[in-house]
Picture 1: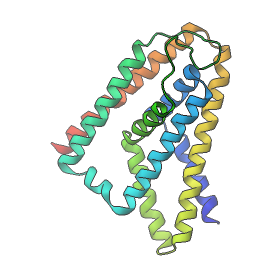
Picture 2 (picture 1 turned 180 degrees about the horizontal axis):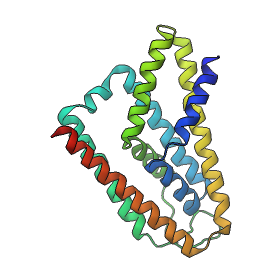
Picture 3 (picture 1 turned 120 degrees about the horizontal axis):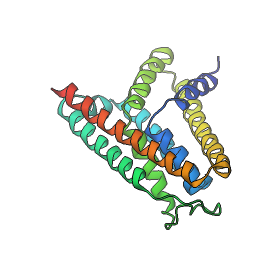
Picture 4 (picture 1 turned 30 degrees about the horizontal axis):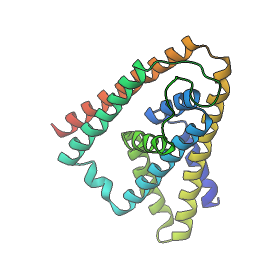
Length: 209
């Protein structure tokens, strides 16, 4: 099978991986509009590229071992907890579809890119996913750089396309939601982000001690 197609198939499996970035993507698309959701998806895309690159140079082995893993886990978990609290208490209002549904000024476009980037990097399962894939691809293709590039291009762009699709669907369902539904969604997402943060810190502590 063509490496590009193989990569696209594998990328579709990552697209259904539940994590903080997925919940944030849906919530952002509903509250801030499709364009903001796309920017967040782009941030996730760039973070995946970073992780793939780090896997090849071995930097993730440094991050995920010993004291460095503990420090990174605490920082990443704290970021998720903060996101969760802010999301939970945020006041929601249905707008006119211009991306200002909660009555507050719309953040700059790069804010969503950075949010997507760091939320995705903070998910340890994404690290594990790309580390495992990198080992497998290196074993399969060896020194065939072209096949390796095609494989990861297919995987990464499939993740980006599916994330954009999620943003589109989330934006479409906004029209059938009420303010009470959006408030409940915010609370659910906030609790989930908070939970992911606690779990991440707990696992970092347990792996160190």
